[in-house]
Amino acid sequence: MNSVKKYRVRLISLMLVFCMAFVSGCRGKNDTEPSADLSAIVETDSAEYTYEEMEADLYELEERYGEFIQVSYEGKSHDGRNIYYADIGSSDAEVQIMVNAGIHGREYMTPMYLMAEIEYFLSEAVSDEKLGAKLNDIMIRVVPMINPDGIAMSQGGLDAIRSEDLKQTILDAYEYDRKLESYQSYKDIDTYLKYWKANARGVDLNRNFDIDYWSELDTERGRPSAQKFKGYLPNSENETKSLISLTDELDGLACAVSIHSQGEIIYWDCGQKGEIRAKTVELAVLANKMNGYPLHTSFTAPDASYNDWCVLELGIPSINIETGTDSCPLPIEQFETIWDQNKELLSALVTKYSE
Ligand SMILES: [Zn+2]
Image 1: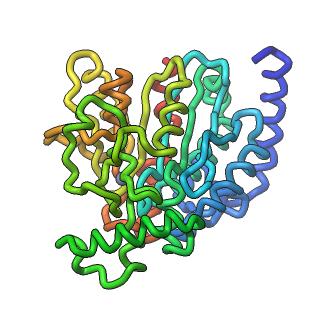
Image 2: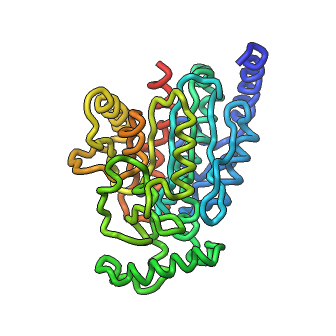
Image 3: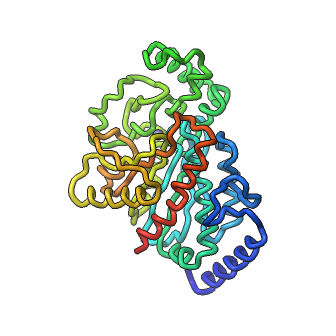
């Protein structure tokens, strides 16, 4: 940033701080009420945070905090929804951080958390000059909803899918899954789709990443299903490809964090050895200090997840934070605790990796 731009950032920052002083109930540092904020863009009072809300909120955030955030999308889901991302900080920064959420359909509280987190972090960056200055040297790339079709289905059922071919794939998956023992309790397709994790082609995106182990991965599903089907080929899905290119573009990627639900635990071990193992533990410990979740300790084999791919193929420390304690989709009552535990995520990451 040149000095004129820096001056403008400071001036706009001061104006925003001034305005915010007049608005009561801002989502400020000491405020643990996520929903009572009249000035908040991201509303967190209803569990069903939709793709359309996220899309509108991203552009509103860009309008309010344009000096710090740029919104765009990389590719589309199989049912034609954009895979949105937001770059926070300087695009010239030599260090980048990746944070993403919403790779599993029924875990749609994670995009809501991450969107609220973007807003909270930006308001902090505006009012905290030191934090704001760090954004000259580091960029956070946030992908809040990797699987918009799966989320739309878990929230809205089969009608949320527009493509007739995809609808047929989903109906076929239902006929296949309902014969499995674990699905015997799903009385109808509406209940079944509420718990859907995969994308609209019945592929579990977090089993679809191209690691060496992918061909050996046995997920007990040989065809499209609500969960666990790894796809016919690695990296076969549009959503997987989008997340890969959004990650590959970052030359100075320092770490990658994925938000899932549920279990209040941090997954970090994918069998990595040496320096990358130590770096991943450091990242996991940073998250543990913030949210208090224990580190997972009983690794058996990789899953061909995004985090496995980052660690094993790129050599980048990457963790998976499992938020919430109830079964998914999480009820709204879980949000406040998740928020209190995890709202300092972006500032903690920026502080650590801009050292
Ligand atoms: Zn998940």
